[in-house]
Length: 408
Ligand SMILES: Cc1cc2nc3c(=O)[nH]c(=O)nc-3n(C[C@H](O)[C@H](O)[C@H](O)COP(=O)(O)O)c2cc1C
Ligand SMILES: [Fe+2]
Ligand SMILES: [Fe+2]
Image (cartoon, rainbow, N blue to C red; front, side):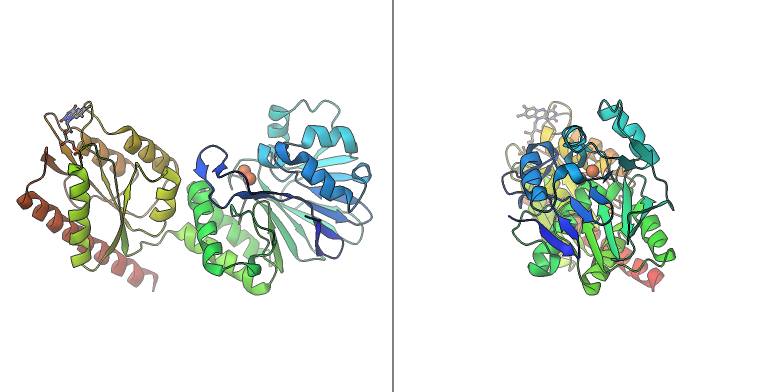
């Protein structure tokens, strides 16, 4: 694939990874990934971010079609995580840039990742600018969106926001713009990315969105470092609004039932709970953790205001898949959810209390005590599960209605 001129004298020179469905070792990326890097040719030639180390040669091949890499004057490193800075040591050696710009926290992160001896690093803080000829770059630190060092670069003449990890999606594609793909696929990929990477930093997202609004930046293109570029006013507004919606985490009228099971008793309870929810008018999605990765669970949870987690008691605790999923979920700090626990047991029956406790620790409201049954559930108990599903569904609807009223 050739480089792509996204604005006059501004080129995408990144790399598309169709081959990996594993994003950074913790999340599935079924559609692959793209590492974006941008080159601006003005009086100074500036490279924004690099790509994951494995793609250095791809990036260089693309870059070389636009300019001689040795002619690059400045590097702007918006984020030091290795998917963006992995090629930095080789590129510094090859290009000998006059300056490398990063945020104050970026300097610390760079020094902790690389031997930066002799690197011409200069720190840029929020509000600082850099004139590169016709254009001026404005820097905006976006601490903890999603690392301490993360920042945005805004190029005023082109109304272009280079947003690093924010607004990214894990999509490998031969097209570069968000308006060239199916909107439903795009929304799914944005949601998957947000809820597996950005979710814990939702408060920072809201602050950054407010800051961008307050600055009255005119933005007609957002170029993230992963996935597709948003190039129309409509797409730019769509992505900003979508991020605000995700960050607010308003309760949604849908339930997620997620479980593991050895002999299917817990599974039977899952289906009975789902039936109760259905009778209460609440759609639910059932996920067996033997089939579903924890990141898929988080993507589904993004649409659900109620999270019901089940595990049989296994060696006085919960099943390993459930423990993994709960650890992952807790780290991503979902807010504003109702929760419930269920499971079958044989003799000691600790699992449901463990789950109840973990969901409570995540700040979930738990309208019902944990549901448990010894060994194989009888019809009467499954009826109780159905009733519990109904009660939970009604509680969810009350919460959704109250929130809608509060938010007007
Ligand atoms: C390896 C193993 C360990 C178990 N450990 C416990 C335990 O510590 N306490 C307990 O109450 N039940 C324990 N059980 C019993 C299960 O919780 C019980 O069989 C339950 O009905 C299984 O539910 P399921 O059909 O959803 O897998 C254990 C079962 C197995 C196979
Ligand atoms: Fe990152
Ligand atoms: Fe990234």
